[in-house]
Image (tube, rainbow, N blue to C red; front, side, top):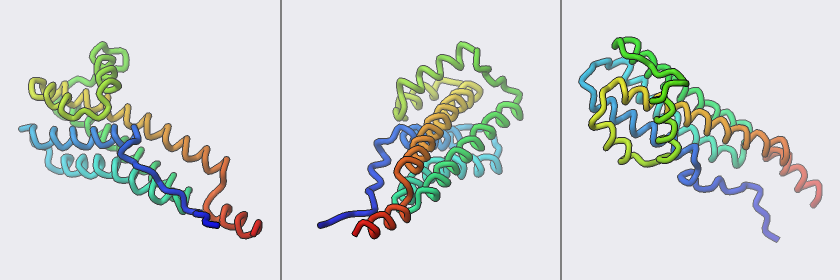
Length: 180
């Protein structure tokens, strides 16, 4: 009788949370490399926050197989990194005298629609970005980052629910050994 206590973590590439975080990461890199406005110290922080956002999803899901609390913690770190990136873009807009869209702005709502329809389509956004101002691009990335945060938060709730419903790795080892 073969029983595996360690469940496979699955293909994170298929997860919407990872796809959206990866899109934000790629668009952030494009923005940093294609803007003539210099904000070097913040750029480095933005690179780290965007990378951390996507990488913590990967590591969190891997760790979840043997330590559900650790996995949930890392997914929560991904949320924190995405929030940090979002604030960096808000600061960028403020520092350069640009306007930030409100939640009721028609451009904000249009960017939300584009983000929902093109969750991982880097080329779609790059084609659009090539004709837009830094102000518009930064606002679009803020919207996409907000979507990533929401989706990653949903993933974290799902993981929390699974932990509460099915227990953790050590609990399941104990149950298995007790039943044997």
